[in-house]
Image (cartoon, rainbow, N blue to C red):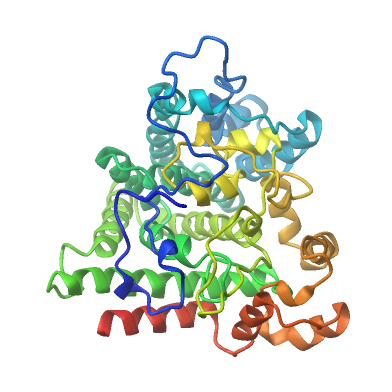
Length: 454
C-alpha cells in the first residue's frame, strides 16, 4: 500500500491510462514498502554517523570552477584552463568514481527523520546558488571586458554551461520540497539555463509517466542520445505548457497570465540576461545563450541514462503499473553521488520524491549502471560505445525478453530481429504503444491537451 499526502495531480491533466496511484505530483511522497518510516523514529541517534556528511560540501567545486580556472590562467598564462568545467565533471569525476569505488550502505530506518531534519544538508544545496550566480556575473564581466580570445570565451561559456547543468540538478533537489523558499530557490537556479519549465514538467509530468512511451524524458532502447535530445526538449516543453494551461483552466484563467509559472520562470531568465547585457555589453549575449544550451543539454543527457529502455508493464485494465525500483538505472559510485546529491539513487527518489538527498537509499533490486553518471554521460555522447555497453545490460535486466523494453519505434523491427521478439507481456503491450509512430513528447502533449479540454 502506498501512502500519499501533499499535492495531488488532477487526473484531468493526463488523459492517460495510468494507475491512479501514480497520479501524484513529485511533491507528494509515497513510501515504498522497503523504505517506510514512521513518525516515532529516534530523533537523536547516537550510534550512527554519516560518513559522507562533509563530502557534500565538495558539490560547490562546480560553481567555483570559473574562479578556479581564472586563478589557474593567471598563475600559468595558459588559457586552456577556461575549459576546466568539462574537464572536472567528465574527466576527473569519472576517474574518481573508478578510484574511490562504490558505497551501497544505507542509513538505518531509525535515523531517517532525524537525518532529513538536519538543516546542515539543506545549506549545502543553498550555498550552491549564490556561488553559481557570482560565477555567472564574473563570466559576463570577463566576456565583456575584452581580455579573452574567442576560444577562451567559448571555454568559459562551456564551463558556465556545466555549472548551469549541475545547477539544474540542484534545482531538482530543491524543487521537490514543500518549503516555499526551496521552491523559489529552485526557480532561481533554473534561470541561468532558461529551463524554468523543467520544475513543472518534471514534477507533474515525468514522475507520473516515467518509464513509459508517453514520457518525453524516458529514452528508448535503440535511441541514441542525439535522437533523444530534440525529442525530449520539444516534448518536455510541450508537456509543461499543457500541464500549466490545464491547471490555470481549472482556476478559470487563461494561460496568458502572470499566474502562469512557466511565463514567470522564463521572465526571470529574460530579466537576468537583459541585466547582464546592459551591464557588460551585447557581446555577452551569444555566450549566455551558448552556456544555457550546454546546461540544459547536460540535464537531458542525465535524463537519457536514468531510464534507458526501461518500461512499466500494463495491467489488464490498460493502466500502467506503479513505478518500481526496476524502472530506474542506479549507481552507488561515491564521487558522482556527491557531485549530484545522490541523484544516482534514482529508484528511491521515484518512490519518495520529497525525501532529501542525504536520506536516499540503495535498493537491491534496482538495475545498476557500470559506473557513475559522470562517466555514463561521456558514453552517451558516443552511441556505438553506449549500445555496446548498455544494450546487453538492458537485455539481461529483462532476462532476455526484449519485448519488455521501451523500444525506439523506428528501430523496433531491427531490434526484435536481433534479440528475438517472442512474448506478449505487458512490456510488449507498452512496446507496441511505443511503436505506434508518434513521439513520447507528442503523445504527452496531445493527451495533456485532451485532459485540459475535457
